[in-house]
Length: 295
Ligand code: BTN
Image 1: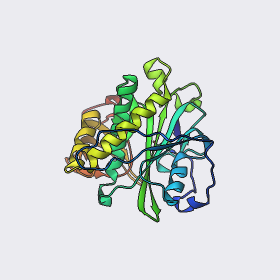
Image 2: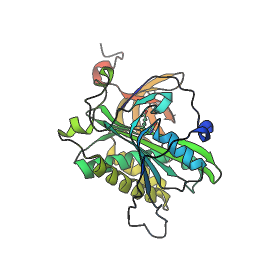
Image 3: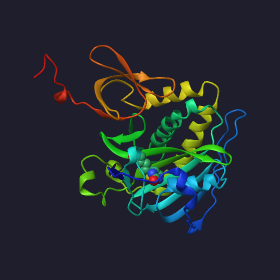
């Protein structure tokens, strides 16, 4: 549903101690047309009534040897995890809380593109399933009218089968149980479309879109394709006036596209291009720009 600042001390290395039994295990297989010779992961979806975090559960299963394509969905999360150690508030049935295990065969330097890929997939899934057009804020926040509708958290995890990544996606379905401080900054599928969303339809579209984009990413020239597809769906790619907060500094500038690894290029006032690999990006509205010729 949304995030709040909250220091956390859970690390993926500690995951093997989690014991959670699925209330209901449904195996769902999706058929996607494979692009040429690339293998499409077989998708299995595990559903839970309640979990601390679908990312933690997926990571625990990855450590136990679960295959690429295993998805975990929960009706609620009691300790949902957001970016930058924040909490992801996840009340029952108010959101789609989803994680998928991937075991990419390509170099680690390309793994940041997985989060861009996931953002493209969410964008397409919402368009296909709800006719909802969204924007993507770098790197992977899904927005409607500048309000956040979905967040994505990709976490790497060391497993006996090699390093894997858990891509976690939280889509706000309804806003009724938003905590008061989130109304200003968060949106939901229901409030954006004026209709009650069908979580199963969105889930099906999401899995389909993820597999499609994952295939594209692994194909020859995949990184360039993903960067292009991301830019085609995001108003933040080019010419957006933004403020970037990195760990210990802030800068303002205008976006100038993405590097081939997905990093954001920001041109500062003095014409320098800064490469942003991590941080919080927010839009600077015209009334906030105070320069020598403006008052
Ligand atoms: C963000 O801060 O923008 C990322 C939020 C990611 C939330 C999702 S909900 C499903 C998955 N499980 C988690 O604990 N987090 C992710």
